[in-house]
Structure formats: structure tokens, C-alpha cells
Image 1: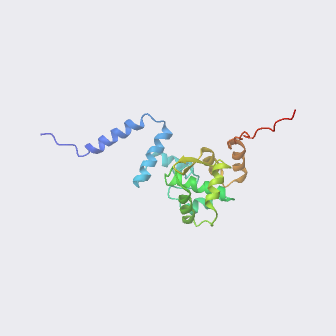
Image 2: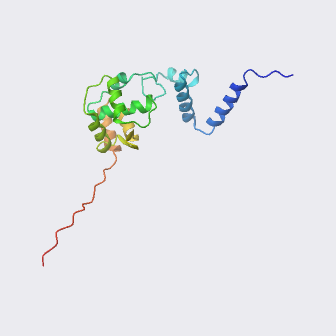
Image 3: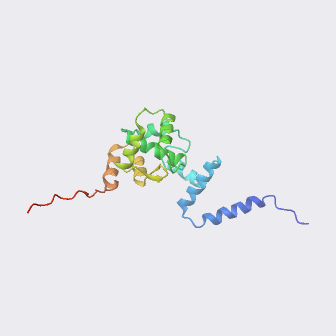
Length: 190
């Protein structure tokens, strides 16, 4: 009688992973593997981390220079040095998305994260509204939730350099639509 391979389940899992990843580009493959490892609480050892440390990048899978996956919200916000409530909201939304894998969130989530980051008290509802309507950092995600926009991500990644961030603002800010007036012009007298 043939002995059962003690690694049969691991081999089957590996085959499934390799099949799923083969359709993706190399950067997407690294992101999937890094995210899966992060969610499972594992540390990946291998070529990509080795390349990063040899290059002196020291980046975590978040893509934030000098910040690993275990950065606290307090450290993250401090490293970004936001100068307004709207910028702080954008940073907190970015943190939720990139480090906590929370794609859609409510103002309450931003409030809780701001408290965890030991941030100053401010009118978060107004700042979230301004970050959505005026700045374009956030957008509606349905069911009263918001999500960070690609423009918002680009802005936060440019921080703490306010000059570079302002260039992102100039080049990337979505155009605001103007409403047509619903008033009718007064009738002319004959």
C-alpha cells in the first residue's frame, strides 16, 4: 500500500495559489502575497524584502517610505504632518484603507482613529464633508460611507511636503461641476 504524502494539503494549496497568481502582473502578485501574509500574521522572507533592504528602501508593503505595516496611526499622522483638518481626515482615511484594509468607512471610524492617533479634537463631520465636496479627497461609497479617492491617496503620499502636495492639488483635483440656474429670466414688458 502506498503511503500518503504528508504534505498533500500544502501542495494542493500551493498549486491553487500559483494558479490564481499566474494571471496577475508581478507587482499585483507581490501585493496579493503581502496582503495575505499580513492578514494571516505572517512575515514573508525572500527576494522582494531582500531587494528592498539591499536598496535601502525600507518600505513596508504599504508603499510608504520608511514606514512598515505595523506603523501606528499616531506615527503615521505625525510623519505626514497635516496642516488642516481636511488634510488630517485624508491621512486618517488613507491609514484606514492602506493599513487596516477598510475600504469604506463612516465619520465615526475617522473619529475613533483620530482618538487612537491622539489627534486634536475638531469637527470631524464638517472636515469629512469638506474633504468630500471641496477637496475631492473622499467620495461616497454608499450606505452613508465614504472612501478615499485616488486623488486623495496621491495627496497623502505627497505629504509631508506641502509644496509637492499643492502641485498634486493643482494637477489632480477634480473639476467641480456648476449647477445651471433654475430661475427663469424676468419676462420683458411690451
